[in-house]
Amino acid sequence: MADKLEWMNKHLTLIRYLTLEDAAEKEGYKIRPDLAEHFVGVRAAEDMVFKLARLGDYKSGCELLAYIAHRRAGVWWVYRCILSLLEELAINPAVDRDIAEIGTSFDMKVPEWAKVEIPKATPAQIEQMNAMLEQARAERAAARAKLDPEMLKFVEDAVEVAFQEFKRVHGIHPMDLLKKAAARVGEDPYQLDPNSPIFVETKKLKEQIQAVRKETVETIKAVIPPKVPEHEKKLRDNALTAVYRWVVAPDEPNSKACLDIGNECPDTPAGLLSLSAFWAFGNLMPGGDQLVPTPPGLAPNGLVQTLLMCGLHKGGTRKVKERYEVYFNLGVDVLGGKDNWEASLAEGRPPHEAITAGAPNGSPPAPPDTPNNGYKRWKPEPNT
Image 1 (tube, one colour):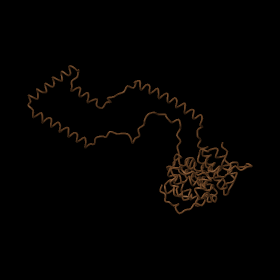
Image 2 (cartoon, one colour):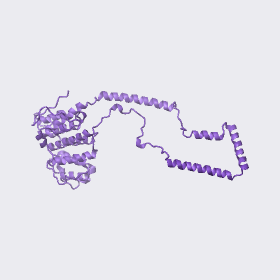
Image 3 (cartoon, helix red, strand yellow):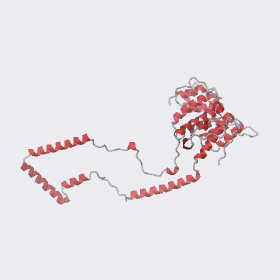
Image 4 (cartoon, helix red, strand yellow):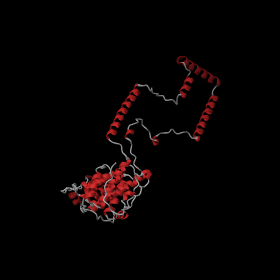
């Protein structure tokens, strides 16, 4: 994906820290040792963000954006990144492999592109070989015609006497032996005995390995419950709705809702973003008598890890580097003030509700029974 450098003339306005020093001291941002040389002489965090982009390191650029972003804008940005991933998955869904399929076969499969096919002779090559054979026969006949007939017969009789002696000793005429050898040219000269001890032991070993594999698979399935796509989609939608509600109104009840639903699916991008929104609120004890501040770096690190989940997600239409470039450009639009939640509020519907990924047969979700033209307090759906 070509980067048109549309962000070159933009300025980031929705940021908390203007300098790299502030990002490091107040949010715990750490410069990777392999990138340290690029940070030399750069003080403004915004300048460093765009420098990383010019270097083509969009992943590091996204990480820095997450640490300097205004927390509300940062959560909205990563929310938009998840929507980008869902749009990819609507085109090319991720396919989960059943653990029972792992190690079911020990036979080495050669891919089609690696198979060697013996080339077949062309009609022209066959015609050329026949011509050469006829020429050899003609030359042999011409050579025999030049010999003394009596001398030729004497030689042939002597050769036949020798052949008969060979037959007496070995039980086969040399010419018959030659024909027999020619007939076996196409056969495998190294045929293996299927009952050989090495094959018997190999079979036993494979059976033992398969028994262990089967037991291991059964143990894993007993410990890890199978995925239920409908339930996972419900959790994802609940988490995205919680995040959207928090962005629209980052108050205590919405923060608590993000914590509750995030704890149900923290191993998914939507679930981790929901927890990140709770951390971004700044109080780890909502509803309590005492304020417990969120530790520095917890919220931005949650955003960074959510982006990593999105970047490495199976399926989709883009590779990791392409996704990070898209996420970087989305971040610039959000932190530059171009992309925000105002339009979705006017429409009365969160953007993720329009995403069709995960809907049956790829069809869009059914419209709500009643229009939602304003903000309402939201609660997670019960998981039944």
